[in-house]
Length: 212
Image (cartoon, rainbow, N blue to C red; front, side):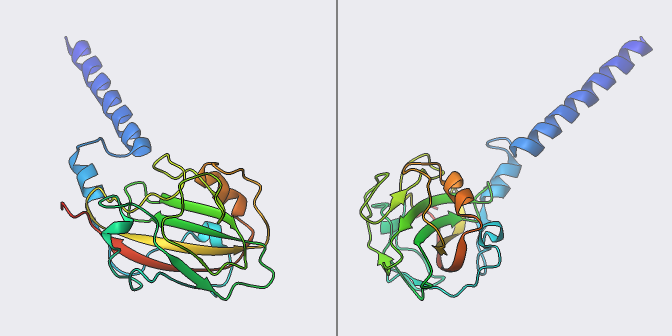
């Protein structure tokens, strides 16, 4: 009988270890208290930047959107609660040696830690911005677009699961034209851009769902 008890105790410990490993790799279970804590983010302060992508490039580009002040609330039109179109962007001080521009929009407060909302790349370096509502096609007159973390080509607006999140609109001046075909996964495009950033600049805003 004692041997059976020892066997059951060992089996329970092994099961607990497997569950703990799974949660470490996969994150908290859906609907769990730990997941609720992870998604109930309230953003505060300037957002973190993807240093792995920027390297030692200078932050010398000027970037702004006429739709909201830097660090302010993003209007619903540019989110999943409304038209869900990209906002207009303006940038300047692009290095003369730049061969293309890339725009990355991401949420650093997502449960995954880095959720990509938009990558549009191979933009003519002579351009000084983008209009609102760029068509959601792999190839546009403004540049090529990647597949975002929603699994769709083009822009996908702020749509935080809970709380207030920060959204970064990062503009990169690159020393090359990227070879990733239109409609490539966003992370593949960013990996190709890594090591080619001449300079960057960004603006950012916050958003929380209207129903929250």
